[in-house]
Amino acid sequence: MNDPQRNSDPISAPRELALPLLHSAERLSAESTPLAEQALGPRDIRFVDTLRISVTDRCNFRCLYCMPDEELDWLSRDELLRYEEIVAIARTAISLGVRDFKITGGEPLLRRDLESLVRELRALEGTREISLTSNGMILDRFADPLAKAGVDRVTVSLDTLDPAKFRAITRRGDLEQVWEGIRAAESVGLGPVKINVVAMRTQNLEELAEFAALTRESERTVRFIEFMPLADSQLDERQEFVPYTEIRTLIERVHGPLEPAQRDTGNGPANVFRIPGAPGRIGFIHAMSQPFCATCNRLRLTAEGQLRSCLFDGGEVELKPLVRPHVDSAALRQAFVDCVRLKPDQHRHYGTRQMSQIGG
Ligand code: SAM
Ligand code: SF4
Image (cartoon, rainbow, N blue to C red; front, side, top):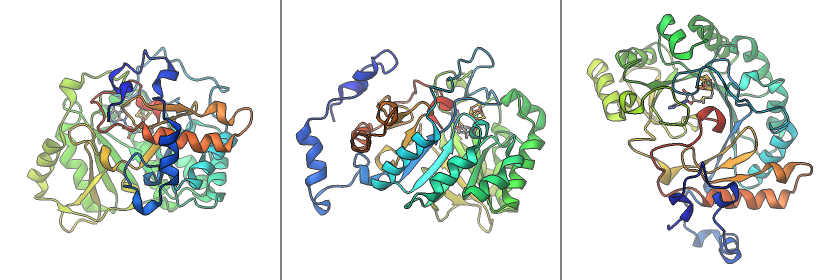
């Protein structure tokens, strides 16, 4: 596809230019062609079943690979989508086939009264699964109310098993407190918890096999994520990046060949394996070395209301004007159809905004 937007710099391009114009004939054809005659693919809205919802750009950590330590320019309260606006967007998403919601941020547990958003999403007819990605630091307090409100499961990010290193990578975190959060989540039925590990050459390479060993002891899934060079990372991508094949070799050298494991709805883009006989699973998210754009079935809603087609490429549609001051359901539906058309054939190997802003 010759998409002019992919050749421009999405950071400097005015927002309107971020949207290639779709001709009305093109729009109509997707809706009027019978389902059986259309090739389903990632640019077809019916292929999308997951919406990642970022509820805040704020965080109580400052992970080296995610954001700077200081001088952060957080969104104001008014800039954030309100819960009723998010719910209106979620309702539209469901009407188009979305079934799963993943709540993220920033640190989603910092958003006040997150339980009430979860309750409203759970009450929507058509919601299948609600999951949450958290750094775990205050999860012990929120696990129970969130489970009662309707969260099904939790993913916690954890890049080292060493408390001092954990403090250094997160610049704020307390590893024991995060384990407390994981245990609390599992004790109220939000488990087995998935653990996200960003592989970094200078930070945790020697611990990757140890992380894999966690899957021998419990049903937790440990997912290894390739380092992604997004804006505001404080680490040098050329130095830190460890490709999937190398991560896997390091693990197999210690644990032997991995065998393919059954995926579940929560594994998203991860390829899932198992150490033979182990109860837990091992996932790999190799967005950089082996992009999975052709099978991407998700859209992302940023905390301030942009619907993003891709984590990396700049294609996005502004939804806030479509829900504030009034919800325009028809325009929202069209915005979803337009946004999914912006998905790249294959994303470029860099991102222009930080993960905490997009909702990683
Ligand atoms: N604060 C929550 C957390 O850390 O789990 C949710 C948001 S965080 C942006 C979501 C996921 O993105 C985390 O697992 C984090 O490790 C990952 N992430 C952030 N920046 C990344 C980067 N540059 N490369 C790879 N993964 C990254
Ligand atoms: Fe916060 Fe998550 Fe980014 Fe770490 S990765 S700074 S916990 S948003």
